[in-house]
Image 1 (cartoon, one colour):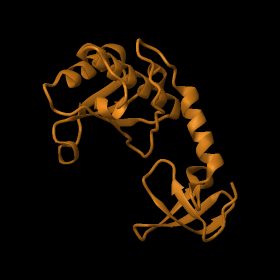
Image 2 (cartoon, one colour; image 1 turned 135 degrees about the vertical axis):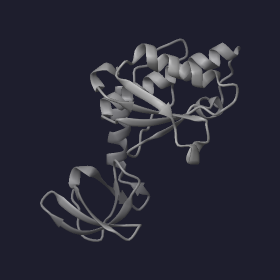
Image 3 (tube, rainbow, N blue to C red; image 1 turned 60 degrees about the horizontal axis):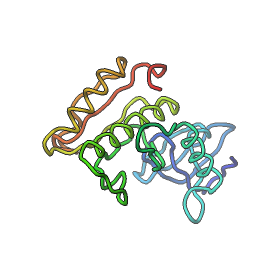
Image 4 (spheres, rainbow, N blue to C red; image 1 turned 90 degrees about the horizontal axis):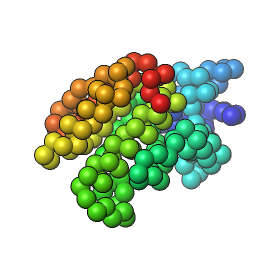
Length: 184
């Protein structure tokens, strides 16, 4: 990707956008929206065109994500899993995951949500994303309990704990992946 001063870019692993100030071989100095200057490798940046991210780069990123997600389980997940930022936030509320799908039982909904969690973890393993936040809400605590049971039983190298109370109240679980080989 060719970058030159004045180009608008977005940082792949962080929620930062800005303008290219200078380019030196593979290093790019960016003045971000927060007013600070940061230096990144070209490979850490995506160029933003008039209508958002450059179409080729976005399609390539979506294709990589689709290839990394295996459709399994009773209810195939059709939603594209996008893990953006250093610590992606994944909303597990069923109205977000499958707004147009009709489930017969609450068990079907829970199965769908847990299948989605497994696919997100597989994608995170492929993309080498160490931290995730699953937003499950407070409710009766069934999804939270089942999510943590799944993590304990199937993912021994994954650590989990309550997400930030300031951001999510008591309705989120933060996950840290310690070994990617066990997250498939």
